[in-house]
Image (tube, rainbow, N blue to C red; front, side, top):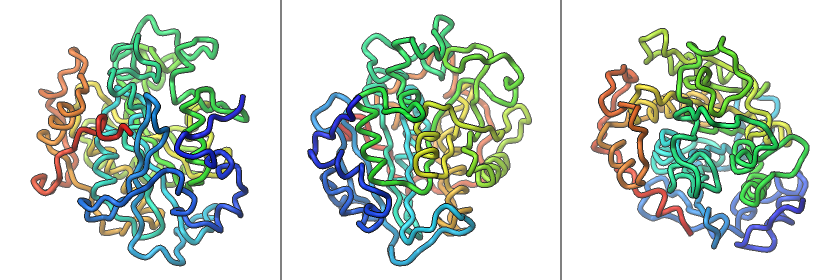
Amino acid sequence: QEMTKNKNSPDVKQDSQKSDTQLRSLSLRERLKPYNCTKLKKLKNKARQCSISGGKQYATKFYIIDAPDTGKQKLRNTNTMETNKPIVLVTGGVHGTEPAGMLAASEIYKQWVPRKGHLVVIPVINVCGARKHSRYLKCSKETATSSQSMPDKNSQGQNSNDPVQVDDLNRDFPPNEMPKSDFANDIWDLVSLIRPNVFLDLHEGWGFYVQLKDNPHNRLVGNTRFSKGSSVIAAPNALKVAEAMVDEVNKGVKDEKHKFLLSTPPVEEGLAMHLYQSFGTISMVQETTVKGQPLELRASQHLIMTSKALKELGFLSKKFRPATLSKTVAESFLKMNKIAQHPHHPMNNAKTEHPKRHHDNKKIPVADDLVSSLVV
């Protein structure tokens, strides 16, 4: 299968196939010229907005935030990241029915400033799924009930012959093969140019892994007895960092039945493992739990885990504290993005513990309409 070129430029595929040495000799700005990046004047962190897959139904945008000084900088305590300008990639919305990652990623690109290198954020990868409230890319026939956030008893699971799985972006990157879908090819072209040192993929599960981990789980999608919600799923080279993430987020979790756990490895056909196997990227998948928990809590947990990882790696200051998002911010996000909550999930009325850190949410911009604004 030939990789599909990004329509923004015929040079993207050719550039993405350059050797690591060739790419490292270019600045990130030079590598991403085909993506039409422009500075966002309204953001204090001087983020640049770039376009991917222009003209396609799943077109989206990503954001680059540079450290104030991107000179000779290295991340600490890593033998696999000997680069002067380290790059972190954060993604949300791989599945359109998992809004906590979208909201957290939106907060990250608007508010955070790395102390080293570059931070690249794709807040909503699966724009089509987010619009249709679907887990999948080709989502015209799929609904929120078939997503991992609410188990579908009729799901065919993870059978590779199941046509639905071809539309699952987290199953589109098989090892030692080309990506399965056109859009996955476009994503791979982009990340091959970025060559991130660290990758954090923000997801949600329907239930708590600590309660369900011993149940039979020959499949993940649609399994009513198993979920990896409330876990950090780490590639082999990310276990130490992931353990620190779990310890940090659990400081704000009082109920032992809701505690986060460490798991390994990520799903074999997901982007996290593909990056780890291809470039040695330190890859982690963060999973919050939808069941009985409000969006603002889940998104705040994502921010705690992501910031802990980046502090452990020296990418953020040790003094950095992520904001705790309010119910007002979460409700505005859902309304503006037209993201439906499943009727059996009383998230808005859930009585759950919140992370210990609290900040003035009045200073946090209300999330804009990501879905519409991310379309080229």
